[in-house]
Amino acid sequence: MHCREPHRFEALLAEGVAVPTEGWDFSWFKGRATEQRPSWGYAVSLADRLTAATAALDLQTGGGEVLHFALGRAEKTPALLAATEGWPPNAAKATALLRPHGTVVVAVPEDAPLPFADGAFDLVSSRHPVSPPWAEIQRVLEPGGTYFAQHVGPRSVFELVEQFLGPLGPEISADRHPDHERARAEAAGLEIVDLRAERLRVEFHDIAAVVHFLRKVIWMVPDFTVEAYEDRLRALHEQIEAEGPFVAHSTRHLFEARKPHHR
Image 1: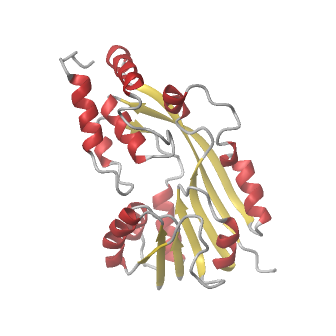
Image 2: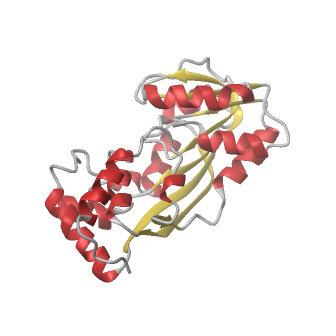
C-alpha cells in the first residue's frame, strides 16, 4: 500500500504525462501495471511463421517491436519483408528498428489501399490492427497464403474506459467480436483456419500508469487529457491508494485465415 504523501497525485499525473508514447514498447509499465498474456504466445508463433515464409508483410506494425522480436527468434527470415504503419512517429521508429532485418517500412494510412501487387505475399501478419482491411489482405496474399494475427476483442479494458466515459452499451466495439470478424474475413474470400479468444486480467497499480495507458492507446478515451478528466483521475487515484490495484480485463483473439487456391 502506498503511503499518502502530500502532492503524490500531482506528481504521478506529471510522471504519466511525461512518458513518450511512440511505438508499442510497454516496458515502462513494469512494476506499475500488469497484463496477463494470451496462452498462444503470438510473437513466438509469428517467429515460426516467418521462418517458413518467403515473402511477408506486417500490417500496422506500430514501432516494429513485435516484428523485431519475432525476427530475432526466427531461424531464417523471408527473402522479401515489408511492414506498414500509418502514424509518422511510429513509422520512423519502426524503420530504425527493422531496417537491420532487411525490412522496408512503408507509411500507409490505416484506411488506404495497400501499395503492393496482387498475390505479393505468402504471409500477412498483424498484432492489434485497428481495423483489419480484409479485402486488401485477401488481395495481396498469394493463393494458399496465410493471414496470422492477434486482434483486440470487444469491450477490452472497458472497466477502465467506463471510469471516464460512464456506462457504455453492449453495441460499443461489438464489431470486434470474433464472430463478426470471422464473417467479414469469409466475405472477403478467406478461409478460417484457427480462431481462439481469451479474456485476460489487467492491473493498474498507480494513476501514472492509467494516464500513460490512456495517452498511448488513444482510442480508449478519445478526448482524454489530464485536465479534462482531473476529477475522475483523482477519484480513481484515491481508490487505488485505499484498495490496491484497479482491475480490468482485456480481450484478445488469435486469428489465422488462408486464401484458397481456387478463385
